[in-house]
Image 1 (tube, one colour):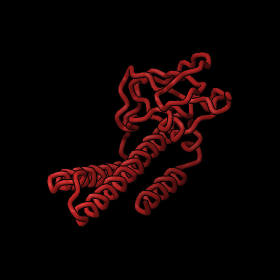
Image 2 (cartoon, one colour):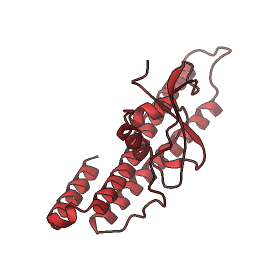
Image 3 (spheres, one colour):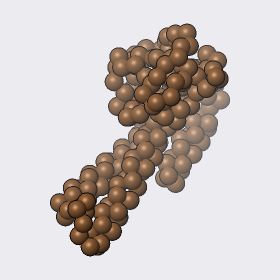
Amino acid sequence: MRKISFWLFIFAFAAFTSGSARAQDAATQQQIDQINGRIQDLIDAQAAQGKRLAALEKSIGDLQDKLNQPAVNNSASADDLKKLAEQVKDLAKKQQDDNDLVLKELEKLGKGGIIPTPSHKSSPDISPPSAANPGNGDKQNGFYYPVQAGDTLSAIAKAYTDNGHKVTVKQILDANPGLTPKNLIVGKKVFIPDPSAK
């Protein structure tokens, strides 16, 4: 996280010193917002993987405790423990790959690399609030938003907030179990909760 903060500081400082005329340019501000959205999505994905890794480590600890106890009918086998250990290794590798990707993106930004912009610039099509069951067991008011090419959760949350429906990336993730920020599927509907509607 310190490396990310350091590169963000360098990027912000470089952008500030490049001239106040360019800093006020709307296109530059939009690109900075997109970059910040992508970085936030990567950080959110990394935090989610950290939570999953911690849960797997806890499961391994529980299995090791069961193996050390006298044999009973519900004990975990050595094969179960090996499978779980492999899953933890895979998850740790994915987390390292994500860390490497974040660092590469930040290096590109530091070197003045160009980040591709999404092909659409429109705001989300907001439908009227409706009672919906997004899959987490309790009814909520909100919206269904079909993902478009180039969308990020940060950009979607910002667009809804700008339209008077304040919502955070965390609230969207909580309302859509299994949704992965870096793997949004174009056309898939994402439930956007409306915390203001009770």
